[in-house]
Image (tube, rainbow, N blue to C red; front, side, top):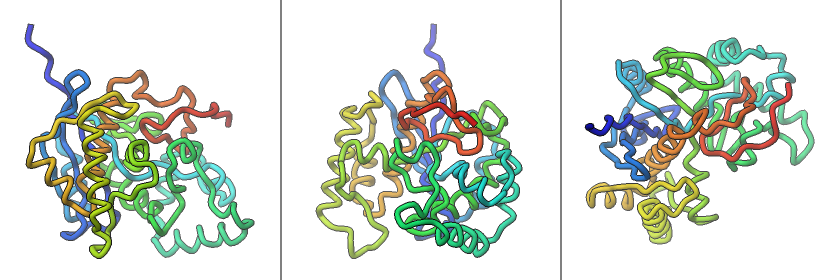
Length: 281
């Protein structure tokens, strides 16, 4: 019998303001057993171009480096809708200025060391709170990206039912990178910080991925040209997309896509993040 056609996998490094200099990067690949092959890298210089690509007919399973939800504590304090789809409609109708002002006021009213509200997945993933509007501006990433995912009709497990032939999970490349590198930095958007140390960190990270030295138990397969491209890109947008690709490859082979049994339906969960206490709201 012929082998079944592998499911197309995608990993997306997202930008809330894509441009020629910093596009949205999508890594496309497939998994056979424990081997994940990178097939191609796509770039989108506008949200509309990316959104139109998402909406094209096809079948894929993807991990996207942008938050899929807001902290329940934040939502409840602000009195925003407590149903996810209604919350996303409310949030997308705000301007970035309104988001920044609202979140800044929330933080200013809280004690030092507890300024931000967090989702349950933030601690196990080591991620920034999804309400953060600077360094990195993940609040704007949710605001910019989620309307296009919803418009494309994709399935968002645990949050919103859609076309089950196109499944989207929240990814976070930093979690997998830290597993290999610890606190070593491997990228910077600042050209002046494209140092030899960061280049060597990227080489070490890629070597670990190729050899399968992560808890995901997967091995990345690259061509020589792809390897060099990932090593020498100081911003590491392409490498981050590949890290998300590996997270998608792991999740697609897990029961419930690797999501915990109890996930807050308002906050969502980051693919491959270890499970924590059960959601009890």
